[in-house]
Length: 112
Length: 118
Image (cartoon, rainbow over all chains, first blue to last red; front, side, top):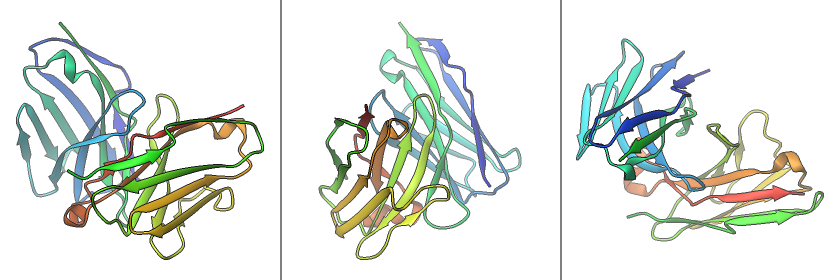
């Protein structure tokens, strides 16, 4: 079965710096990978999707890379702000059916 | 944008009682909705896929008789936790994908329901 690993330790950075979060996966070659943001006590919010044939995707201050050889995705937030503080989840499609499997998420704390 | 709502947002119940959670897609129709459970500091775990007009599909290890799912219309799915016990206390979240986002499975999540069983 698929296994997704995200940094379990919180990432603390200074405002204005670039935050980089990692998502590694094993035992599967997903057709796409997604990133979500989750605030405490709330449901996740979709941020970006990147397909297996795409190396990089950008949206405003967000950038996602997808290395299918390394089985890794990197999620970058440039010019980070305290409002970016949240848990960021990566998700990939399951081997069967139109479903998603999620990583445990990485907590990002941006300090002013 | 697509909006998914859940009700109630919080519920506290006594052990042995049943609790119903509603999930609604407010501005789109969803033939499929997903139910997840999330324990503190853990990932979202898919419990089941709710299919409009047919039986739900449950993930391995999820008891279908304990977690009853009814998808009676294209905008409403309900999850009933029957005979709830303290170990069922968790954060329950539903999601759905609008028709124009189904191809790459962009999910819109509800705000979640915090269930506490005493």
